[in-house]
Length: 315
Image 1 (cartoon, rainbow, N blue to C red):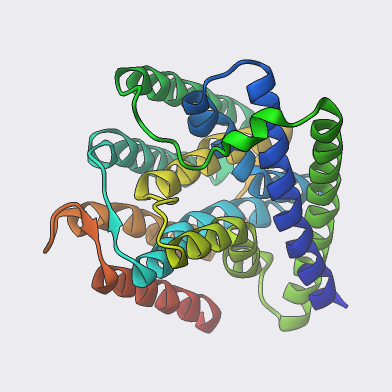
Image 2 (image 1 turned 60 degrees about the horizontal axis):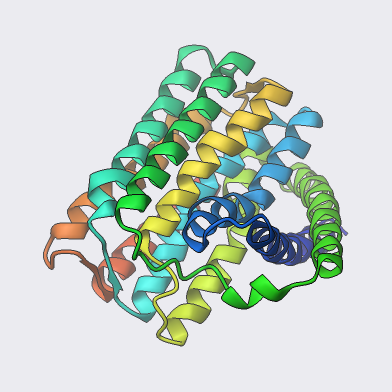
């Protein structure tokens, strides 16, 4: 039954995430926000909703390992799994914003998280507040930079959603909210039982099963876009997702309930993998072919992710 709960939970998270993105974008158009602003802020936050709901639910249940493992695992999966598979299907172009702005911010936040957790093994409410402040600072700088490049195409925003009725927006919000809530409940409950049955920690399940589960929307969208040969996903989008995961998901979760590190492997192994995946993107962006993430690089990233998953279960 636990596996069934996890599967149903994952389906509900995917459905809830999709409806939340649609309703958020439609509502943003109603509020007269520009397409660019919606793409850079509203869509990014909405796609982090599954991670946020799962982490908050886990923290409230006293399973802080799941909160931390979910974010660390999701950040690894976004690069190793999602980016790796997408690049294998079709080469990705890398824009200059990658190394000038988004990548440095992601690396900075990743190291900040490591230092905060390594200090005393707890992510306090004050530290969570600082992460949220860093998120707002990032968004402010992001929007200011975007105004200088007003011709930037934001492909995640569907223009047809401008015509959505108020009734549809409300229904979509209700469906999205309910699906995310019940999906997170079932996923956390099922994952906890699987961990107990397999004799592994909640942290191991969180960094693998739950992390991949909450990254399913990004993976599905990326693979479909790559198969259609549409440039609907870029390195910058996934990096943005990782930034939101650390700053908003852990920031908000720790404000509700301080997050305590219980699984030793999270700080001794997993977080180093997260930092490694973040750091390796810069040399991959320039060597051997500049500003292109081709199939060999995608395969390399994916193999590294497969090794990570294998090592997590072996240990």
